[in-house]
Length: 185
Image 1 (cartoon, rainbow, N blue to C red):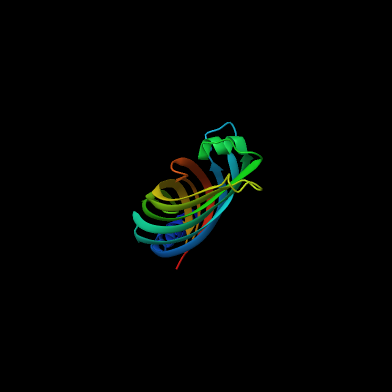
Image 2 (image 1 turned 90 degrees about the vertical axis):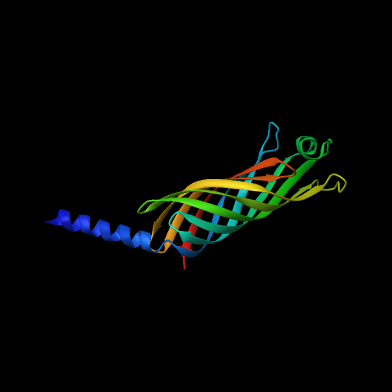
């Protein structure tokens, strides 16, 4: 007797979980960025992002993200050669952020979605060497960004884990792994 009731409850719950996952959504996340400086030492830092999106269909949505990549500190000789082509003294910090627009494709399951996204990212990056203003660089560029991940949703809430790739300083890769919390409005 309890088995049919349990099956009915799961069926109703999965219907509720999928019914509320279309429309406008907002969210925020935290993660880890990896500034790939093409050197023996890669700089990593904590990152955060804000998300606004609209899921038009079960299988398609659009999304805007603002992402702060944090700041990595590396020996200047490595950063200077990799990013500005010259050897720099002391320690250098690399930091950046991006405003991105993505098209998002979903594989929709009752409680879990797998997704991939591709779009354009307007990135800003700065390289600074404290005490040596001549050893500095900044870059503002628009480039392709992409990502993939999975999200678990129930009613109007979702938790998302994803990997994204951006470019800074004319092609230097910046990888990002994050966990985000989303609410559908």
